Image (cartoon, rainbow, N blue to C red; front, side, top):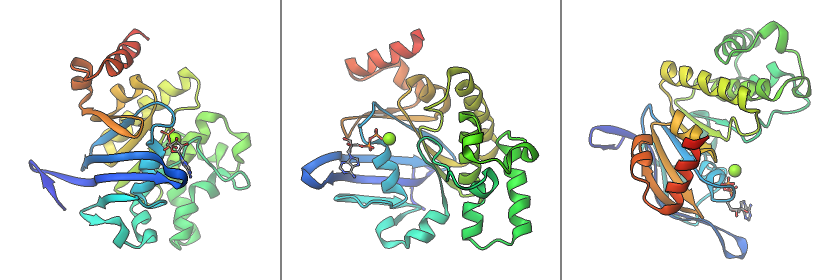
Length: 252
Ligand code: ADP
Ligand code: MG
């Protein structure tokens, strides 16, 4: 694995651009490193290219220019199935399969991996407790019988099922009421400290990025506007727009 100043770089985007048909650029010439066991927040307004970035990392889409490296390997040379086995993905708005129970949703990956039934069940019980859900009360319910917060927790359990070293989270707390969001954020901080995963957390909420991330990359119109620790972003925002963004979070 490559290293910069001693830290291991797990994800590297090198001069990455993504243009969609008709010439619309979702990302322009992005350079970004994520170090092992750290959480990077990808922060920016709707449409700035956050989801596109996550999809490039687990190779749901390919860049039109540049390279994406995971553990030092260009993802375009890695079998996508093998790549995704090492990457948990919490999709925007929980994205649970509506016709499957909470438990079956959480077992999506372990089933694909061919784990026997007992082992899968044992793992889901463990995961439900990890994400703060009562297994007996929740496991057999369908997504429409769960609150938004419970659905997000099941989404997180699904992403963590095979204990991937790398986790991508797309606005995991975006659709929740403020109290539930706060509660899940606190839980996330506990999990982050105990699991030590490498994570990319997408959010449009500055306050959330400042609270949860080790580093923040601010994405505006498909370009990186600033990268730094929460402290650096707070203390020296590099443009007037970023300063305004940070001020609004501190007022709230
Ligand atoms: P975010 O997650 O930050 O809200 P996205 O990464 O989803 O933004 O999208 C970035 C830009 O790329 C948006 O302008 C969006 O409309 C555009 N885009 C996303 N997916 C496609 C697609 N499949 N075809 C064309 N344009 C797309
Ligand atoms: Mg998005």
